[in-house]
Image (tube, rainbow over all chains, first blue to last red; front, top):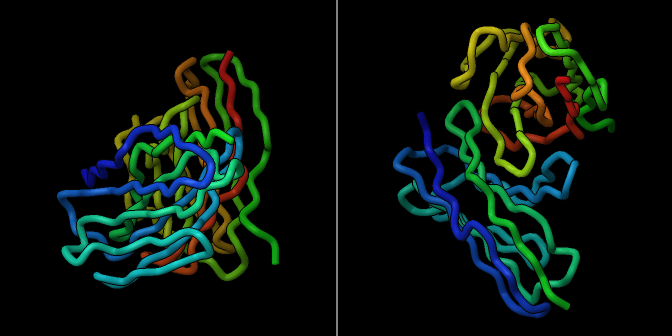
Length: 108
Length: 112
């Protein structure tokens, strides 16, 4: 099956620091999505990427679709306490597969 | 515009019984995905429906099944419930395949 390797598994950072996480796969994807999930809630879509090499921003979030179509990264700049949560990458190649998630903790 | 809605929010069922979970996609969306998320873990792909057809299923036993109705709503059926089926079941919809997908709030299934 299509496996997505997401890293790091968890991050503990100070408020104001920048964050970077990424996803890699041995499979090619047509679309990359990044989600944030709070406890007990459904994941919320942050950014969608549709073209290899595409760089897209949403406020303090920036994500890129890797040129090989096998990877993507998400950066969060100047983190704030409400950034706490689990971030998931998802790759679409007809169906949608998820990475294992990056658990982000932000210390005030 | 209403988002993806799932019902019920919570469901408690005895082991060995049957559970039915329902999902209404965003209006106009034809693709529906189902995922199982055990406590503290990631999203495991269950089923993908598109235009009324099952397009793919994940590595789950046949007692997990579902269908998509002509109005594109979907239901997930779990037969012969086992304790390890206890999880948050999430549904997502997209306009069509390979486009951004939006999730509902999930159904928390507890098998006792």
